[in-house]
Image 1 (cartoon, rainbow, N blue to C red):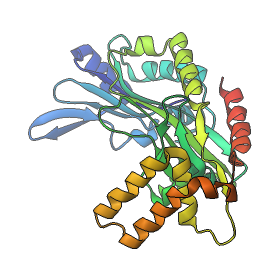
Image 2: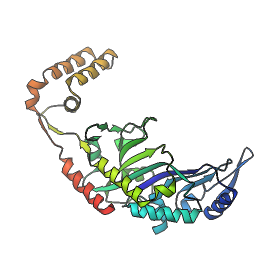
Image 3: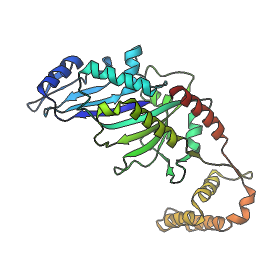
Image 4: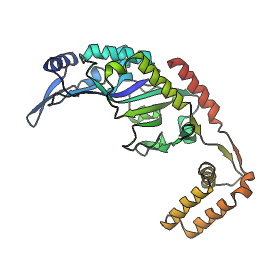
Length: 315
């Protein structure tokens, strides 16, 4: 379940430096007269993790633990299959042995926990139906503009937030990166909880199985509160824009939506005619609501079945 991770040791001893350079086969480099060591040119042949010792004797390891596991097992840098916390713990232990790092001194500063959910339907259909996560204090999912074709959505990722959630089309991502090992004939959505700017999380404590299980339970407790937009059946001829307006009213309330459109009108993003058309529709909403059939999304049972199937595999 652990995927991308960043680990640091801010003050290596000379003995540790020699062990890590030897065990990880780091190359000696020079920049402006300063010496540093890394495996940038060879990392994809040793498990995919980037390892660097900077001129200040600071160690940084970053990359996908899941891909590192796959490399050790099969020789391929892939992470589209199942990966349990027990496998993560064993992989950490192999990483410690293979690199010579000291788990008492290495800190975890960033990590992702996720699972790959195999679907019987097109992933984009699911992504378009996702609204938020949370039971009482919902976090809204937004389209990630850094990814093509609306294939990834995330909650807010402001620097003030230590945790956020993301969902993306895993196979589409691999195709976009021209990964030669992209699976065929599969629909996979990856869901992840991203933890960043972790404080005083040393590797020796992090890889304790009790801690990993605690993180696993937290992950599932959060993702079991994934919320989908309702399906809306409208009279023939209703535009997509009108359906989006209805959905906006249902989830945010008439006053909030009216204020949104008023702001657009005042900023010349809407014409006067467009604004008053929307305003009239919102004011008449209670009287015309019966014309629209609003019910739970048909995606929900499909998602729950696929999600629970993967959950049973990894727990």
